[in-house]
Image (cartoon, rainbow, N blue to C red):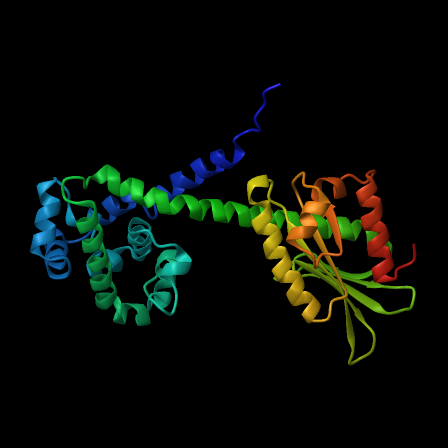
Length: 322
């Protein structure tokens, strides 16, 4: 039998790409150019990129702003800083940080807003972007430069960014799924819950309050209020919901780092939940700090043996009545 899963991820990318075309790619740049003073733009291009480089672009029938950022373009449409970031091959993490000095420009791309602080540094930023553009043009060579190539370079940067965002979405959905499964197990002992913030509080058989909550690292934690001043750290749960078996070893390595940190922080139990068909003995080699492994697909099946074990462990460590 030959069978492939539906290309759902690629369909999502296509829809996202259509919207990004109007924000950060060449169609967005064309729209901005149509609404700026072309003489001011040409003046900026000469000032920031230089006559030689603008002439080299012109020799290939290309406008300079396709490669070189100018203050008048960014002032008109601040989000187009994202166009130049993508074109030059920088991820958001590599671009918007304290080392580059571009962190104060983050609102340009995220909210199409040029703050006063960023505006004061805009000339310097455009000069640096143009310097990077010159290096790119020198590296590619005038003979090879084209409008299509510049667009493709932007897409090469955008692809991993979209995939990373999709992975984050899958991860968040996986965490929510596990949270709901835990809620279904402890629901009869719940005294407070706030699903928006991801908190469940139950009262256990010892009349103590146990909190189950979302956490950035690890993903879900279970703690018990022993006294007014003492909280017992019980279980740390890492969830790797991605279905790509090729990347599971990296994800388990991430889980191991999180669990090592959790155990140093005082958590007695560390569980890892993943979403691929992998032998637990293999998984144990990647994350020896994990006490228990579960498959997300099995936990979603209330009739499975893994669900039964997970339910029993949650009941045991929260101390709620069975």
